[in-house]
Image 1 (tube, rainbow, N blue to C red):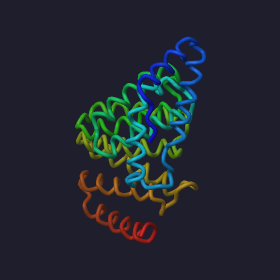
Image 2 (image 1 turned 120 degrees about the vertical axis):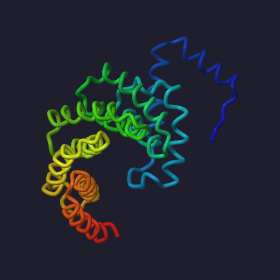
Image 3 (image 1 turned 180 degrees about the horizontal axis):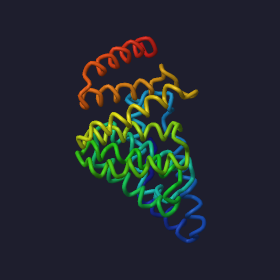
Length: 238
């Protein structure tokens, strides 16, 4: 990495501050450079390269005021950074960053903007992991309703939130409701031309449905579902 002496940094900041428009333009260009350094989505989320890159990007996110930038490429960085913090187990940091971004985007983008809704779904994950089940449920319920209205019931991002919503209901002990939601979500995945019965996300939905079957008192059906999911997973994923 390149390091710039602090005196040079101070001189550059002073030069930029002399012209607010130039300062803002330079800041936004810096945001795009940083967002352009995101790891490829073709890599597994737990790949060492992915984790290392997000670790390098994180210190620049808030100091650069990236949360104020509504460019879709920068928003994508924020969403994936929140998800990565959750994936590596830094749940409190993920929830804090996500909440701060949500508060900002609700004003700058609007409550129904697709990017804001994607972020909200990611913020619910660390909340659930922290045991803040009511908060996660409330956030996912609102997000799911808005995504269904804005994107449609069978949209990929809507279905992802629906899977999470089923997990929220299970966490709250509302097992029959979870089964109803998971059953519908799985059906939509199977019948979707974008997913189908052997897609990785469909198999994840099937796994959630199996858990809800057990918890709602249907162990034999759960075993059948688990067996089929296992067989399909081996064939499709190895």
